[in-house]
Image 1 (cartoon, rainbow, N blue to C red):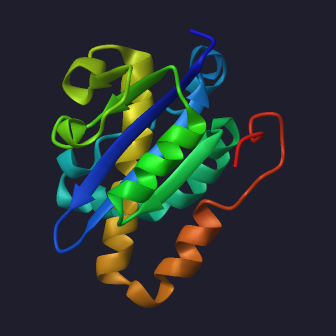
Image 2 (cartoon, rainbow, N blue to C red):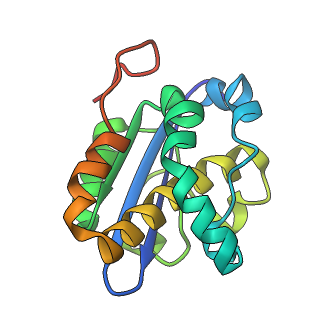
Length: 164
């Protein structure tokens, strides 16, 4: 499991946001797994917990997730996400069941299968959280959207950020 893995997810209400995240597979088995126990499927949280989770998400993401990623992108355009996918060239793509038919890729598994495997589930939750956070921010605070998303996805230099 030393190859690259990617996950694509989306969040939709008034507007749809897609996200893609990529990691080197060995990162999931190393330190990252111990730092992401707080991850949850946001849409399944009760309303009060959801609000608290979204407030804490950016700082937790920056501290515990972002340093391990080689790619993290958000877009309202699925084609842009697909372009990032083909630039990354992961060995395995984990993708939301509803958008899986829209994306051709040589080695992909659906989220419904991936959530049974812990390391795949973590990667899918990261993509899910990014898409959900972006959509909520855009719908509820559009004036701060660009600034907060750029800050969330800011480029960091380090051993795990060799890919744009």
